[in-house]
Image 1 (cartoon, helix red, strand yellow):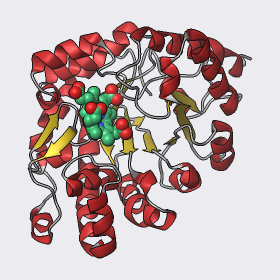
Image 2 (cartoon, rainbow, N blue to C red):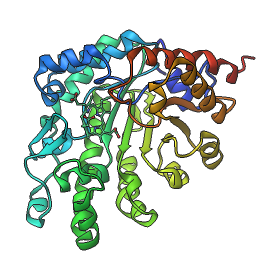
Image 3 (cartoon, protein in one colour):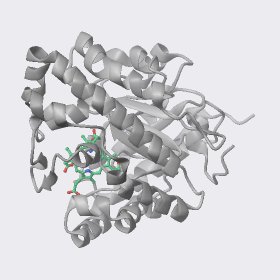
Image 4 (cartoon, rainbow, N blue to C red):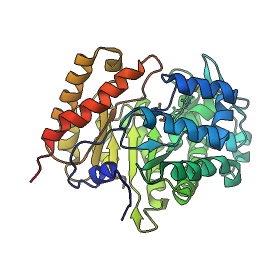
Length: 355
Ligand code: CP3
């Protein structure tokens, strides 16, 4: 099995006994860290940072140098796939991602193809570099966006509240949208498998915008394609099982369906308690989450109180990966992350009774 010095994350995912609950933080490498902002500045742009393996590796490791985190996550972005498809991605300060070409017309969508993975080689080079630097200390998580979430950005051409263009396409041209989603499912599966072959030990799918759909549309336009991905994913690599974490922001009504996709972990936000989520999934999958990142703006006492709440809500035993319910925000004081990580490790021990 794995030769990791710290394999608490994998043990918790497989619901094997652990001494304490593992923790990592969505967006743990990011703008709340001054050392991230310095490297970002040096890179010149966000995409240049993603595309320079030495720099992407450096920022991946930054949070691990500060905190006792139980996992690292590849520094990259979900939008690297549409970028590799030739949409011309830029990140504009204060506006977020913007594509040179949005995908609203049939002829544009019909011209798209699964990207040549050579276009994403910088991601695999970064993974190899990170694995070398980590030297078996903690596992490395790779990731992609869900087809629905990627399509939302591609059809709109940028980030826009409610993504009106894809909602219009869903109503007026569902077959065209299905064609795009099918292409994206193949692309995501290929990119995740290539990440596994490059060395990631866990993969995660971010369905950030799944929660804006109603139940029927969530099944037809998001979950269906997630199942295509789990069906094509490498599940064992070099004798190690590769766990798959599925996170849908706003997915509280669909926890059971998410657990049925073939994933190993369901990531939840704070709109549902872990107690309720655990009752719904039973022994099927592990759970990841779900502290509201807003508490990280408060003082140490509030952070510790919330950590206690989340741990209590999951209850006794293994099967919980502590995380926030969504990404950490740039205004969080870095010291508060230390308080969070240490509190999880300290307080969780009483939930893992030693024989
Ligand atoms: O978690 C990590 O530390 C790994 C790195 C990571 C980034 N993006 C780096 C990033 C991961 C896992 C992502 C995923 C991602 N990217 C998602 C899904 C996760 C979620 O939050 O739900 C989405 C929707 C994106 C698309 C994206 N990337 C947007 C909308 C933006 C702009 C918004 C913003 O926060 O500025 C980004 C940029 C981005 N990706 C940054 C980082 C650290 C900030 C860019 C900067 O440094 O200026």
